[in-house]
Image (cartoon, rainbow over all chains, first blue to last red; front, side, top):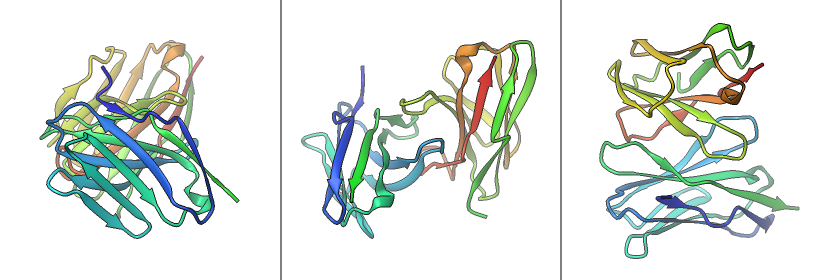
Amino acid sequence: DQQVKQNSPSLSVQEGRISILNCDYTNSMFDYFLWYKKYPAEGPTFLISISSIKDKNEDGRFTVFLNKSAKHLSLHIVPSQPGDSAVYFCAASRGDDKIIFGKGTRLHILP
Amino acid sequence: DTEVTQTPKHLVMGMTNKKSLKCEQHMGHRAMYWYKQKAKKPPELMFVYSYEKLSINESVPSRFSPECPNSSLLNLHLHALQPEDSALYLCASSLQLTDTQYFGPGTRLTVL
């Protein structure tokens, strides 16, 4: 049973436009959510996180939105840059339990 | 120092060899993790250490043996591995369990 789902395996966005990556989860007990970015042959790099007590967290070009009633979160990247091309993983955790990852979305930024 | 380091970067070993992967952080983090990642898949959690004690073992075969000699070091001892164990092995650390994890660059392991 996949508790964290990223239903789009890939996404292509024009440079300068907004990239929106989506993530759905099934466990309403999750209280902390993270986004990681991964380049080929490298480990995942933490990008941004959000606690369940918030509905938005912003860090520079990256904003994460959390909709608890829909069990949905999204990552917005504005404006998209060529260096943003990577695989993005959504992850969630509950209390002091382990972190559950989604399968990732490959983002291609087009020139 | 705000990074997690892993050595070696690449490792090729035979099925009868014994080798170790090393992970180090000097951020004062008290939780450390080993993940295994196959191509085009998200990292799979293997082991979690909290305050140098094994907290989670995700039913990993005994040919993988973790060790946390101190709060800055995490080792993964490998013995009698199989070719299907070839993968990227990632180490991560966090201040406490469930805090943001910071990942190392990984060790690319090939088992022949």
